[in-house]
Image (cartoon, rainbow, N blue to C red; front, side, top):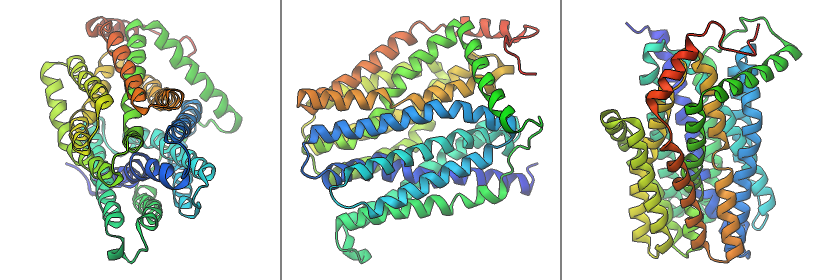
Length: 436
Protein backbone atom coordinates (compact mmCIF):
# COMPACT_ATOMS: atom_id res chain seq x y z
CA UNK A 1 0.00 0.00 0.00
CA UNK A 2 1.30 3.42 -0.93
CA UNK A 3 1.93 5.74 2.01
CA UNK A 4 0.86 9.38 2.02
CA UNK A 5 4.50 10.41 2.26
CA UNK A 6 5.46 8.39 -0.81
CA UNK A 7 2.47 9.66 -2.80
CA UNK A 8 3.29 13.25 -1.87
CA UNK A 9 6.90 12.74 -2.92
CA UNK A 10 5.88 11.20 -6.26
CA UNK A 11 3.45 14.01 -7.07
CA UNK A 12 5.99 16.66 -6.06
CA UNK A 13 8.56 15.05 -8.36
CA UNK A 14 6.10 14.82 -11.27
CA UNK A 15 5.10 18.47 -10.87
CA UNK A 16 8.62 19.53 -11.81
CA UNK A 17 7.93 18.08 -15.29
CA UNK A 18 4.69 20.10 -15.28
CA UNK A 19 6.80 23.13 -14.33
CA UNK A 20 9.72 23.05 -16.75
CA UNK A 21 7.80 21.70 -19.77
CA UNK A 22 6.43 25.22 -20.14
CA UNK A 23 9.91 26.25 -21.25
CA UNK A 24 10.07 23.45 -23.82
CA UNK A 25 6.71 24.35 -25.36
CA UNK A 26 6.29 28.12 -25.04
CA UNK A 27 9.96 29.10 -25.38
CA UNK A 28 12.02 26.47 -27.24
CA UNK A 29 9.44 25.14 -29.68
CA UNK A 30 7.02 28.05 -29.82
CA UNK A 31 7.60 31.73 -29.31
CA UNK A 32 11.37 32.09 -29.18
CA UNK A 33 12.01 30.96 -32.81
CA UNK A 34 9.16 33.19 -33.99
CA UNK A 35 10.20 36.24 -31.94
CA UNK A 36 13.87 35.74 -32.74
CA UNK A 37 13.15 35.98 -36.44
CA UNK A 38 10.44 38.66 -36.46
CA UNK A 39 11.33 40.88 -33.48
CA UNK A 40 14.89 40.49 -32.25
CA UNK A 41 16.23 39.67 -35.72
CA UNK A 42 14.10 42.19 -37.57
CA UNK A 43 15.62 43.37 -40.84
CA UNK A 44 17.87 40.31 -41.13
CA UNK A 45 17.61 37.78 -43.96
CA UNK A 46 15.51 34.78 -42.85
CA UNK A 47 18.22 32.28 -43.78
CA UNK A 48 20.73 34.12 -41.60
CA UNK A 49 18.40 34.15 -38.57
CA UNK A 50 17.87 30.42 -39.08
CA UNK A 51 21.65 29.98 -38.95
CA UNK A 52 21.89 32.08 -35.78
CA UNK A 53 19.09 30.17 -34.06
CA UNK A 54 20.64 26.84 -35.06
CA UNK A 55 23.99 28.00 -33.70
CA UNK A 56 22.41 29.04 -30.39
CA UNK A 57 20.76 25.63 -29.98
CA UNK A 58 24.01 23.88 -30.85
CA UNK A 59 26.09 25.95 -28.41
CA UNK A 60 23.66 25.19 -25.59
CA UNK A 61 23.67 21.49 -26.47
CA UNK A 62 27.45 21.29 -26.56
CA UNK A 63 27.81 23.11 -23.24
CA UNK A 64 25.41 20.86 -21.36
CA UNK A 65 26.71 17.70 -23.07
CA UNK A 66 30.26 18.35 -21.88
CA UNK A 67 29.27 19.38 -18.35
CA UNK A 68 26.33 17.10 -17.56
CA UNK A 69 28.06 13.70 -17.28
CA UNK A 70 30.72 15.03 -14.91
CA UNK A 71 28.25 17.01 -12.84
CA UNK A 72 25.92 14.02 -12.79
CA UNK A 73 28.63 11.68 -11.58
CA UNK A 74 29.67 14.17 -8.88
CA UNK A 75 26.05 14.58 -7.82
CA UNK A 76 25.64 10.80 -7.52
CA UNK A 77 28.81 10.40 -5.49
CA UNK A 78 28.39 13.45 -3.29
CA UNK A 79 24.62 13.36 -2.92
CA UNK A 80 24.09 16.72 -4.59
CA UNK A 81 21.41 15.78 -7.12
CA UNK A 82 18.65 17.96 -5.69
CA UNK A 83 20.83 21.06 -5.11
CA UNK A 84 22.24 20.76 -8.65
CA UNK A 85 18.72 20.45 -10.08
CA UNK A 86 17.53 23.57 -8.26
CA UNK A 87 20.64 25.52 -9.31
CA UNK A 88 20.09 24.72 -12.99
CA UNK A 89 16.36 25.43 -12.64
CA UNK A 90 17.15 28.85 -11.16
CA UNK A 91 19.47 29.58 -14.10
CA UNK A 92 16.71 28.69 -16.54
CA UNK A 93 14.03 30.64 -14.67
CA UNK A 94 16.06 33.85 -14.42
CA UNK A 95 17.23 33.65 -18.05
CA UNK A 96 13.71 33.07 -19.36
CA UNK A 97 12.21 35.89 -17.34
CA UNK A 98 14.98 38.23 -18.52
CA UNK A 99 13.89 37.78 -22.15
CA UNK A 100 11.05 40.17 -21.30
CA UNK A 101 13.42 43.16 -21.17
CA UNK A 102 15.38 42.41 -24.38
CA UNK A 103 14.66 45.21 -26.84
CA UNK A 104 13.69 44.91 -30.50
CA UNK A 105 16.65 44.11 -32.77
CA UNK A 106 18.92 42.97 -29.92
CA UNK A 107 19.33 39.41 -31.16
CA UNK A 108 22.67 38.98 -29.39
CA UNK A 109 21.18 39.41 -25.90
CA UNK A 110 18.21 37.24 -26.82
CA UNK A 111 20.45 34.44 -28.08
CA UNK A 112 22.69 34.66 -24.99
CA UNK A 113 19.75 34.41 -22.58
CA UNK A 114 18.23 31.61 -24.65
CA UNK A 115 21.44 29.58 -24.47
CA UNK A 116 21.51 30.03 -20.69
CA UNK A 117 17.85 29.04 -20.49
CA UNK A 118 18.39 25.85 -22.49
CA UNK A 119 21.39 24.97 -20.31
CA UNK A 120 19.24 25.49 -17.21
CA UNK A 121 16.42 23.39 -18.65
CA UNK A 122 18.59 20.53 -19.94
CA UNK A 123 20.97 20.53 -16.98
CA UNK A 124 18.11 20.40 -14.51
CA UNK A 125 16.61 17.41 -16.33
CA UNK A 126 19.80 15.39 -15.77
CA UNK A 127 19.27 15.55 -12.01
CA UNK A 128 15.48 15.42 -12.20
CA UNK A 129 15.68 12.06 -13.98
CA UNK A 130 18.13 10.74 -11.39
CA UNK A 131 15.77 11.62 -8.50
CA UNK A 132 13.25 9.07 -9.79
CA UNK A 133 14.97 6.38 -7.72
CA UNK A 134 14.49 8.50 -4.58
CA UNK A 135 10.74 9.01 -4.84
CA UNK A 136 9.47 5.49 -5.58
CA UNK A 137 10.49 1.82 -5.23
CA UNK A 138 11.89 0.08 -8.30
CA UNK A 139 8.67 -1.74 -9.16
CA UNK A 140 6.93 1.63 -9.60
CA UNK A 141 9.56 3.40 -11.69
CA UNK A 142 7.76 2.76 -14.99
CA UNK A 143 4.42 4.16 -13.83
CA UNK A 144 5.96 7.09 -11.98
CA UNK A 145 8.15 7.97 -14.97
CA UNK A 146 5.07 7.87 -17.22
CA UNK A 147 3.27 10.14 -14.76
CA UNK A 148 6.07 12.67 -15.11
CA UNK A 149 5.80 12.63 -18.91
CA UNK A 150 2.01 12.98 -18.71
CA UNK A 151 2.26 15.92 -16.32
CA UNK A 152 4.78 17.54 -18.65
CA UNK A 153 2.49 17.26 -21.66
CA UNK A 154 -0.46 18.66 -19.72
CA UNK A 155 1.36 21.40 -17.86
CA UNK A 156 3.33 22.62 -20.84
CA UNK A 157 0.27 22.41 -23.07
CA UNK A 158 -2.02 24.30 -20.69
CA UNK A 159 0.30 27.27 -20.20
CA UNK A 160 1.12 27.32 -23.91
CA UNK A 161 -2.61 27.41 -24.69
CA UNK A 162 -3.00 30.43 -22.42
CA UNK A 163 0.03 32.09 -24.01
CA UNK A 164 -1.38 31.51 -27.50
CA UNK A 165 -4.69 33.07 -26.47
CA UNK A 166 -2.78 36.06 -25.13
CA UNK A 167 -1.10 36.59 -28.50
CA UNK A 168 -4.29 36.04 -30.50
CA UNK A 169 -6.46 38.30 -28.33
CA UNK A 170 -4.10 40.61 -26.43
CA UNK A 171 -6.77 43.20 -25.67
CA UNK A 172 -8.73 40.66 -23.60
CA UNK A 173 -5.73 40.46 -21.28
CA UNK A 174 -5.11 44.19 -21.16
CA UNK A 175 -2.03 43.96 -23.39
CA UNK A 176 -1.01 46.43 -26.06
CA UNK A 177 -0.42 43.90 -28.83
CA UNK A 178 0.94 40.52 -29.87
CA UNK A 179 4.58 41.50 -29.21
CA UNK A 180 3.71 42.58 -25.69
CA UNK A 181 1.84 39.30 -25.19
CA UNK A 182 4.86 37.23 -26.28
CA UNK A 183 7.13 39.12 -23.89
CA UNK A 184 4.63 38.57 -21.06
CA UNK A 185 4.57 34.88 -22.03
CA UNK A 186 8.29 34.61 -21.27
CA UNK A 187 7.59 36.05 -17.81
CA UNK A 188 4.71 33.61 -17.32
CA UNK A 189 6.98 30.65 -18.12
CA UNK A 190 9.52 31.82 -15.55
CA UNK A 191 6.81 32.21 -12.88
CA UNK A 192 5.18 28.87 -13.79
CA UNK A 193 8.54 27.09 -13.67
CA UNK A 194 9.41 28.63 -10.29
CA UNK A 195 6.00 28.07 -8.70
CA UNK A 196 5.62 24.41 -9.62
CA UNK A 197 9.23 23.62 -8.68
CA UNK A 198 8.39 24.39 -5.04
CA UNK A 199 6.78 20.98 -4.31
CA UNK A 200 9.99 19.22 -5.37
CA UNK A 201 12.04 21.58 -3.22
CA UNK A 202 10.01 20.83 -0.09
CA UNK A 203 8.78 17.25 -0.50
CA UNK A 204 11.45 15.35 -2.46
CA UNK A 205 14.46 14.30 -0.46
CA UNK A 206 17.79 14.17 -2.26
CA UNK A 207 20.05 11.19 -1.67
CA UNK A 208 22.41 11.78 1.21
CA UNK A 209 26.16 11.62 0.79
CA UNK A 210 26.48 8.02 1.90
CA UNK A 211 29.99 7.64 0.50
CA UNK A 212 31.41 10.42 2.64
CA UNK A 213 33.27 11.79 -0.39
CA UNK A 214 33.53 15.58 -0.41
CA UNK A 215 35.42 18.46 -1.97
CA UNK A 216 38.01 17.81 -4.65
CA UNK A 217 37.66 14.06 -4.26
CA UNK A 218 34.08 14.31 -5.55
CA UNK A 219 35.38 15.89 -8.75
CA UNK A 220 38.09 13.22 -9.13
CA UNK A 221 35.69 10.34 -8.53
CA UNK A 222 33.16 11.91 -10.89
CA UNK A 223 35.69 12.02 -13.73
CA UNK A 224 36.72 8.41 -13.05
CA UNK A 225 33.10 7.29 -13.08
CA UNK A 226 32.52 8.85 -16.51
CA UNK A 227 35.67 7.16 -17.84
CA UNK A 228 34.50 3.89 -16.31
CA UNK A 229 31.17 4.07 -18.11
CA UNK A 230 32.87 4.87 -21.40
CA UNK A 231 35.20 1.89 -21.03
CA UNK A 232 32.23 -0.43 -20.49
CA UNK A 233 30.37 0.88 -23.54
CA UNK A 234 33.39 0.20 -25.75
CA UNK A 235 33.33 -3.47 -24.68
CA UNK A 236 29.72 -3.95 -25.81
CA UNK A 237 29.50 -3.74 -29.61
CA UNK A 238 25.70 -3.78 -29.76
CA UNK A 239 25.39 -1.07 -27.12
CA UNK A 240 27.89 1.07 -29.01
CA UNK A 241 26.02 0.60 -32.29
CA UNK A 242 22.69 1.43 -30.69
CA UNK A 243 24.06 4.58 -29.05
CA UNK A 244 25.47 5.71 -32.40
CA UNK A 245 22.13 5.09 -34.11
CA UNK A 246 20.26 6.80 -31.28
CA UNK A 247 22.49 9.87 -31.42
CA UNK A 248 21.90 10.22 -35.16
CA UNK A 249 18.15 9.86 -35.29
CA UNK A 250 17.33 11.60 -32.00
CA UNK A 251 19.35 14.58 -33.24
CA UNK A 252 16.96 14.73 -36.18
CA UNK A 253 13.93 14.41 -33.89
CA UNK A 254 15.06 17.20 -31.56
CA UNK A 255 16.05 19.43 -34.48
CA UNK A 256 12.54 19.24 -35.90
CA UNK A 257 11.09 20.07 -32.48
CA UNK A 258 13.26 23.17 -32.12
CA UNK A 259 13.40 24.39 -35.70
CA UNK A 260 9.93 23.62 -37.14
CA UNK A 261 8.43 27.03 -36.40
CA UNK A 262 11.52 28.80 -37.75
CA UNK A 263 11.29 26.73 -40.94
CA UNK A 264 7.62 27.59 -41.41
CA UNK A 265 8.30 31.30 -40.99
CA UNK A 266 11.15 31.08 -43.51
CA UNK A 267 8.65 29.70 -46.04
CA UNK A 268 6.37 32.67 -45.44
CA UNK A 269 3.65 30.82 -43.49
CA UNK A 270 1.50 32.74 -41.03
CA UNK A 271 3.08 32.67 -37.56
CA UNK A 272 -0.32 32.38 -35.83
CA UNK A 273 -1.07 29.16 -37.71
CA UNK A 274 2.37 27.74 -36.91
CA UNK A 275 1.81 28.23 -33.18
CA UNK A 276 -1.63 26.60 -33.34
CA UNK A 277 -0.09 23.67 -35.20
CA UNK A 278 2.48 23.33 -32.44
CA UNK A 279 -0.37 23.17 -29.92
CA UNK A 280 -1.85 20.34 -31.96
CA UNK A 281 1.42 18.39 -31.72
CA UNK A 282 1.46 18.88 -27.96
CA UNK A 283 -1.99 17.47 -27.32
CA UNK A 284 -1.80 14.68 -29.92
CA UNK A 285 1.51 13.61 -28.39
CA UNK A 286 0.12 12.59 -24.99
CA UNK A 287 -2.30 9.81 -26.00
CA UNK A 288 -0.22 8.86 -29.05
CA UNK A 289 2.86 8.15 -26.92
CA UNK A 290 0.88 5.66 -24.85
CA UNK A 291 -0.64 3.97 -27.92
CA UNK A 292 2.69 3.86 -29.75
CA UNK A 293 4.30 2.27 -26.70
CA UNK A 294 1.71 -0.52 -26.82
CA UNK A 295 2.40 -0.99 -30.53
CA UNK A 296 6.11 -1.36 -29.78
CA UNK A 297 5.38 -3.85 -26.99
CA UNK A 298 3.37 -5.98 -29.41
CA UNK A 299 5.80 -6.01 -32.36
CA UNK A 300 9.09 -5.19 -30.64
CA UNK A 301 10.73 -1.90 -29.74
CA UNK A 302 13.20 -1.99 -32.66
CA UNK A 303 10.45 -2.43 -35.27
CA UNK A 304 8.47 0.34 -33.61
CA UNK A 305 11.47 2.69 -33.85
CA UNK A 306 11.85 1.87 -37.55
CA UNK A 307 8.19 2.80 -38.12
CA UNK A 308 8.69 6.10 -36.32
CA UNK A 309 11.85 6.86 -38.31
CA UNK A 310 10.02 6.08 -41.53
CA UNK A 311 7.37 8.60 -40.55
CA UNK A 312 9.98 11.23 -39.71
CA UNK A 313 11.75 10.65 -43.03
CA UNK A 314 8.45 11.09 -44.86
CA UNK A 315 7.81 14.30 -42.92
CA UNK A 316 11.15 15.81 -43.94
CA UNK A 317 10.63 14.88 -47.60
CA UNK A 318 7.11 16.28 -47.54
CA UNK A 319 8.44 19.35 -45.74
CA UNK A 320 10.58 20.21 -48.77
CA UNK A 321 7.43 20.64 -50.89
CA UNK A 322 5.37 22.27 -48.12
CA UNK A 323 3.54 25.36 -49.36
CA UNK A 324 0.42 25.83 -47.21
CA UNK A 325 -0.57 26.19 -43.59
CA UNK A 326 -3.00 23.28 -43.93
CA UNK A 327 -0.11 20.99 -44.85
CA UNK A 328 1.87 22.26 -41.87
CA UNK A 329 -1.06 21.30 -39.60
CA UNK A 330 -1.15 17.81 -41.08
CA UNK A 331 2.60 17.38 -40.58
CA UNK A 332 2.31 18.67 -37.00
CA UNK A 333 -0.34 16.04 -36.23
CA UNK A 334 1.75 13.28 -37.82
CA UNK A 335 4.81 14.28 -35.78
CA UNK A 336 2.69 14.23 -32.64
CA UNK A 337 1.79 10.61 -33.36
CA UNK A 338 5.40 9.40 -33.23
CA UNK A 339 7.34 11.99 -31.21
CA UNK A 340 6.82 10.40 -27.78
CA UNK A 341 6.89 6.86 -29.17
CA UNK A 342 10.38 7.01 -30.65
CA UNK A 343 11.76 8.32 -27.35
CA UNK A 344 10.05 5.77 -25.11
CA UNK A 345 10.84 2.78 -27.35
CA UNK A 346 14.48 3.83 -27.63
CA UNK A 347 14.76 3.82 -23.84
CA UNK A 348 13.11 0.40 -23.47
CA UNK A 349 15.27 -1.18 -26.20
CA UNK A 350 18.42 0.21 -24.61
CA UNK A 351 17.40 -1.21 -21.21
CA UNK A 352 17.31 -4.70 -22.74
CA UNK A 353 20.88 -4.66 -24.09
CA UNK A 354 22.77 -3.31 -21.07
CA UNK A 355 23.89 -5.15 -17.90
CA UNK A 356 21.10 -4.71 -15.32
CA UNK A 357 23.58 -4.32 -12.46
CA UNK A 358 25.24 -1.41 -14.28
CA UNK A 359 22.06 0.26 -15.51
CA UNK A 360 22.63 3.54 -13.65
CA UNK A 361 26.05 4.01 -15.25
CA UNK A 362 24.85 3.05 -18.71
CA UNK A 363 21.77 5.26 -18.58
CA UNK A 364 24.04 8.10 -17.57
CA UNK A 365 25.87 7.63 -20.86
CA UNK A 366 22.55 7.33 -22.71
CA UNK A 367 21.49 10.69 -21.26
CA UNK A 368 24.85 12.16 -22.27
CA UNK A 369 24.09 11.38 -25.91
CA UNK A 370 20.59 12.75 -25.42
CA UNK A 371 22.16 16.06 -24.42
CA UNK A 372 24.30 15.99 -27.56
CA UNK A 373 21.07 15.71 -29.57
CA UNK A 374 20.06 18.88 -31.40
CA UNK A 375 23.70 19.99 -31.54
CA UNK A 376 24.66 19.00 -35.06
CA UNK A 377 21.17 19.08 -36.60
CA UNK A 378 20.28 22.75 -35.98
CA UNK A 379 23.76 23.78 -37.09
CA UNK A 380 23.47 21.77 -40.31
CA UNK A 381 19.97 23.08 -40.95
CA UNK A 382 20.99 26.68 -40.35
CA UNK A 383 24.19 26.38 -42.40
CA UNK A 384 22.47 24.78 -45.40
CA UNK A 385 19.72 27.40 -45.36
CA UNK A 386 22.23 30.23 -45.15
CA UNK A 387 24.63 28.94 -47.80
CA UNK A 388 22.02 27.90 -50.35
CA UNK A 389 19.70 30.82 -49.73
CA UNK A 390 16.82 28.35 -49.85
CA UNK A 391 15.38 27.11 -46.51
CA UNK A 392 13.77 24.12 -48.23
CA UNK A 393 17.16 22.46 -48.66
CA UNK A 394 17.71 22.66 -44.89
CA UNK A 395 14.84 20.27 -44.13
CA UNK A 396 16.24 17.77 -46.64
CA UNK A 397 19.56 17.87 -44.78
CA UNK A 398 17.76 16.63 -41.64
CA UNK A 399 16.45 13.63 -43.58
CA UNK A 400 20.03 12.36 -43.63
CA UNK A 401 20.01 11.92 -39.84
CA UNK A 402 17.04 9.55 -40.02
CA UNK A 403 18.53 7.57 -42.91
CA UNK A 404 21.91 7.17 -41.19
CA UNK A 405 20.32 6.40 -37.82
CA UNK A 406 18.08 3.70 -39.29
CA UNK A 407 21.04 2.22 -41.22
CA UNK A 408 23.08 1.82 -38.03
CA UNK A 409 20.04 0.51 -36.13
CA UNK A 410 19.78 -2.31 -38.69
CA UNK A 411 23.06 -3.65 -37.27
CA UNK A 412 21.70 -3.72 -33.71
CA UNK A 413 20.97 -7.37 -32.85
CA UNK A 414 18.90 -7.31 -29.66
CA UNK A 415 19.53 -10.97 -28.81
CA UNK A 416 23.30 -10.61 -29.21
CA UNK A 417 23.13 -7.50 -27.07
CA UNK A 418 21.33 -9.39 -24.30
CA UNK A 419 23.86 -12.24 -24.35
CA UNK A 420 26.84 -9.89 -24.18
CA UNK A 421 25.23 -7.84 -21.43
CA UNK A 422 24.57 -10.94 -19.34
CA UNK A 423 28.15 -12.10 -19.85
CA UNK A 424 29.44 -8.80 -18.53
CA UNK A 425 26.90 -8.94 -15.72
CA UNK A 426 28.29 -12.28 -14.59
CA UNK A 427 31.89 -11.13 -14.50
CA UNK A 428 33.29 -10.88 -11.01
CA UNK A 429 34.70 -7.37 -11.53
CA UNK A 430 33.05 -5.78 -14.60
CA UNK A 431 34.70 -2.43 -14.10
CA UNK A 432 38.31 -1.99 -15.22
CA UNK A 433 38.33 1.35 -13.44
CA UNK A 434 36.27 0.24 -10.45
CA UNK A 435 35.82 3.01 -7.95
CA UNK A 436 36.83 2.08 -4.49
